[in-house]
Length: 476
Image 1 (cartoon, one colour):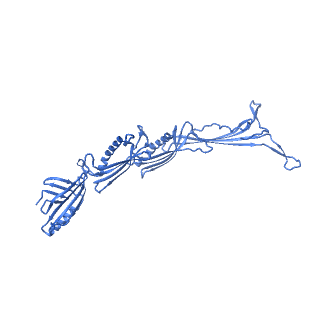
Image 2 (cartoon, rainbow, N blue to C red; image 1 turned 180 degrees about the vertical axis):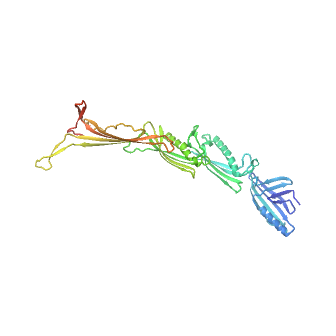
Image 3 (cartoon, rainbow, N blue to C red; image 1 turned 60 degrees about the vertical axis):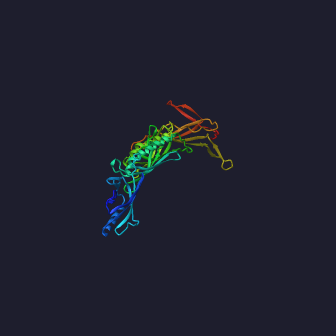
């Protein structure tokens, strides 16, 4: 005799015939996340062979997972949980023969139970069953927001949709709403989603049917723009992730060098490149056209100056991992002065110009000494390295002799050598071209106490130099 309440799991039905009838009522527990049901039933048969076949069929069907559970009251459907269209998820069953008075040679009492995860199909949740977020701050008060939770499969718009797809379709809306709420709560500073970037993301399916998926997604605040400023705020470029940049001012003031104005800034840079936004074929253009010019400009802005140019570069494009790493040396001028380095060396020679003549006075090593006076010469070598063309100005003469010595330095010779190189432009023609010139002056001088001019037949003037004679000179 058929019963009015029929329970069907997979291909097996309880209560549809006198061979398999429900014993008592069924029991169920229902929540937003999960549904459980258990029922006792008795199965019988008129022959041993038929009874044995029936038992094996029952046990094989009822211990199989992810089958449809259908409960009907007559012709009315009361419950319908179907993994095929994701109205029932992760369906798990068990069947128990506990032993009872119903057990005979051709009858048996079974207890059947089923547990089913349910789709989070509330309109507010959009298949997000549970979720949480956490806000943390680094020592520099850089904000890091982590979102985590669980999405379920479902049946939106009568379309069976797996949990991962529901996550992809809906998580951004929920995260944006959290950003909006936090920005309103923390009134002392801004928490704007546009100022953050996704630095990590993971999705884990809890089963092989994509019924339940756990996720974790981390947003990190962008403190320094990826490649430009947009309306006064950092530009969070979708293709540049987790950029790290440092500007190191390298100042060398060694003894004997005159460091003037222009300095060198070492830039250390690294970032990951999102291949979904920027494929590896475009990484070079991203670096040369966007990132590198921005770093040159910022090196100048961070440390001040009227111009900046790349002096050296070492860049790695890791196309297999989607990474850019670079070390740049950038010349930055802090003002109008352009001298990078100036080295000056002075040397001085004092010649007594003595002439020794042997005389005999009964003692050995006796001489007659004659000197027309001291001869003092000096040489000056100046090497100047500057940004721009060489300036051909003769260096200043040596320091004057100390002690009020009469006279002055007269130049007796001059040689100069200059060379130039250009920096700032890479192999693609990008960057600011700057000339680096080097010029060296070697000048020789003679100290002159006085000079007279005499006429010569061709009307020219000839300078006759009179040397310092028998004059004590104290060197500085």
